[in-house]
Length: 203
Image 1: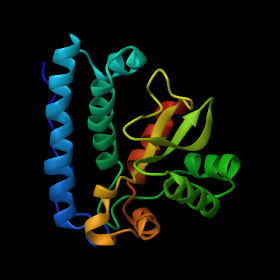
Image 2: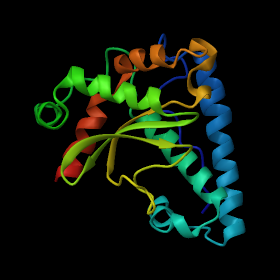
Image 3: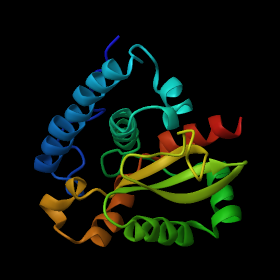
């Protein structure tokens, strides 16, 4: 069964003013769709059609780079959209997640600072992540379309939250001001989703 572009969980303008409608049109309708189209071509060429993301990620080191880039591109973007919510609707970290942030990352302010630093420190294109690794929270960044679920990942773990720091994620509104985009990002985090993922990862 071919991969398809999953529907956005909100309208194109729902994340204003942090992510503008025009950026969402390019980012979701064009970039994300292109990764879907190219992934279907890549898995057909590699003879791995019909396999799930989990199956592909488990052997990604043996697959062509086109599968790696486009499978990551599709999965990472879908995860990114699901981790966002309109301003004022995303809830708050659960008591359990807040306690883990305090214990593992030094509190919410330190967590945000370190997460933003991971995004700013990623040279070129990539992603900043909050993951669960060996039962503890950890902040990492990955290049291009890689993630912590791929078999070759230097830092493996269950993703909880991600920020896209490819320029196409923010350039129309923020130009080269990645730090400003990352600062605004926190007002649209879907903590309800992060809480669910954290509970599942710990459970």
